[in-house]
Amino acid sequence: MKKVKIGTQTAQVGDTDELSQAVADELQALIQSRAAEGKMAVLGLATGKTPLPLYAELIRRHRDEGLSFKNVVSFNLDEYEGLGRDHERSYWAEMWKNLFDHVDIDPANVAVPPSIYDDAEEAALGYGKQIWDAGGIDWQLLGIGGEGHIGFNEKGSAATSLTRRVKLAQKTIEDAAKSFGGEENVPTHAITMGVETILRARRIVLMARGVAKQKIVYRAMAGEVGSEVPASFLQEHGNVGWFLDYDAARSPKNVRN
Ligand code: GLP
Image (tube, rainbow, N blue to C red; front, side):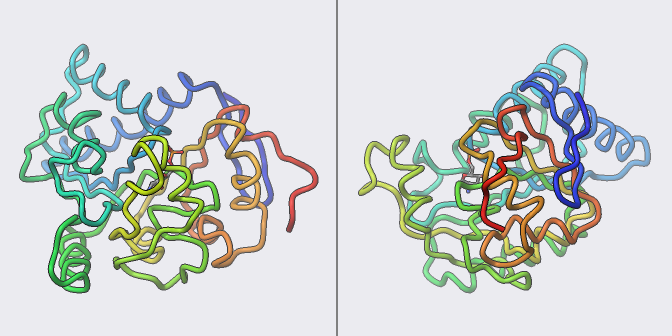
């Protein structure tokens, strides 16, 4: 791993395995220090392909090294509207398949925004309140969308946005089309934690891998801070770890901003 300065921010750069180890080390230290104090660790977790090697490493540490998730409370960033928990592409299903089914977390401590609801505002407010009642998020994991979204805070999301129903951007729908077997099957809306909700986390770790993320990572870290690239708001947080692979970290010279 090496440190690379990009704009005002510093990234930890390595290969996929090094990134997973480094982030798992950080998370393990938090979980275990909380457990030693008899306290819960409140995590904010993300879906997408990016964190999968990290989740595999956490499962391995649970299985081989006894890392326990008994004192973990987890809140997911976002969820598609209308799929329901049984749908294999729902973030609920993905989180259980890729992590929770394989560790000793108490199912009562797993929260993902609702997918089916009558009143979106009530559903979103209820989820925001649940996070608040848990004492806020200690450690938030993020990926980054093709146009710089965090959670499903698409371009145009305000720094003050809270947990709410959002319309997905066309680029987000295109990116998801393959895994849904066509654009027409991708939900058009979702519930997401807001930018402000995310920024309230005491520690944030953003992971990005692959050349497709290079330009947007650069704009998030070194570009102007604003709603055009919602991930750029992270520059103002003060406790963000940027964990990038070599492809995502190379700073392209001719990027706007
Ligand atoms: C989705 C999720 C985001 C995730 C992003 C990137 O839009 N809502 O939370 O960060 O995709 O996904 P991937 O990691 O597959 O590139």
